[in-house]
Length: 317
Ligand SMILES: NC(=O)c1ccc[n+]([C@@H]2O[C@H](COP(=O)([O-])OP(=O)(O)OC[C@H]3O[C@@H](n4cnc5c(N)ncnc54)[C@H](OP(=O)(O)O)[C@@H]3O)[C@@H](O)[C@H]2O)c1
Image (cartoon, rainbow, N blue to C red; front, top):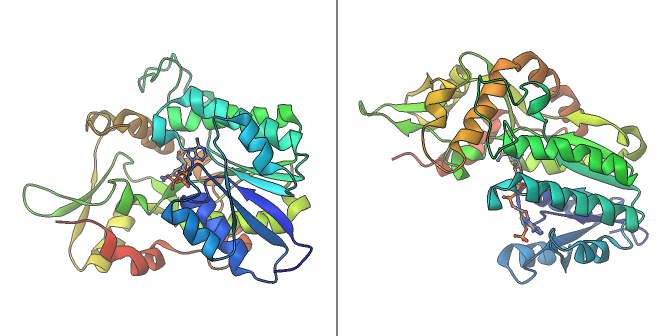
């Protein structure tokens, strides 16, 4: 670690996105940055694992602006992410984003990356009844509040890169999105995307891309960029899964209405999300650039590569 290295404060360092960034920073021992991991639970196993590889671990809570100011103080930059799925409240997510933007300003940070998604209401106004309005004022709550919060970083006047992420292939392991066995015993990957391609990524690669964005600083300040590992159709994903699992996986394209009715927590939000990605597929794919992601992170994984490392963790019974 270089003695004069600059500190990056990392929200979500114990999670997927921030964890990838923290690991990228500490792995680059002679690199320009140090990692400060923000967590509500500095004693947790994940926080201790980060400390063990050389990250500084500090307590902070996105709901507590003072704690963020303290955790950002003295840093060069910050990686900012919120976790909608912990509380399912778009308003709370928006407030947390504002807390980070204002704390970044107070701390005088020179570069913030805000991990964001699109405000889908710019494409599907609330009165467009192709999909239901959720939580009173959203179409895709876990997207819309992040997109709406983009402005908070502009308003705060912090040098920001708006980083648009995509579906993690890791959802096949951790988010119940893996193939399901049908009544005939065959595995099926179920998405309401018809034949449209889904930009997606290995979650670990998001942090690796963020690392390069910090390294290339000036180039990406003030810019909105989107990344992906690959854009694949459901049929292409099913074919790759069949090869990796050694068992046939079919792609079962259902309607967004059917998907929304599945009943798991957030099924309506996810159904609207896939419908947005299907109906605005050209826009959505253009905004998620595989070439840019690979130029930032030459280790960027394809779906095949991700499967080679992770296929045995995909729950299929
Ligand atoms: N799954 C996908 O395909 C996907 C794709 C694109 C975007 N996203 C977005 O990614 C976000 C989640 O990021 P992730 O997957 O990297 O997270 P994750 O692995 O689920 O972990 C959540 C992280 O957020 C931190 N956190 C949550 N609430 C906090 C609070 N109040 N104060 C401080 N830290 C807090 C947690 O830290 P501690 O618990 O240690 O405090 C933890 O590090 C979601 O908003 C989701 O919409 C997901």
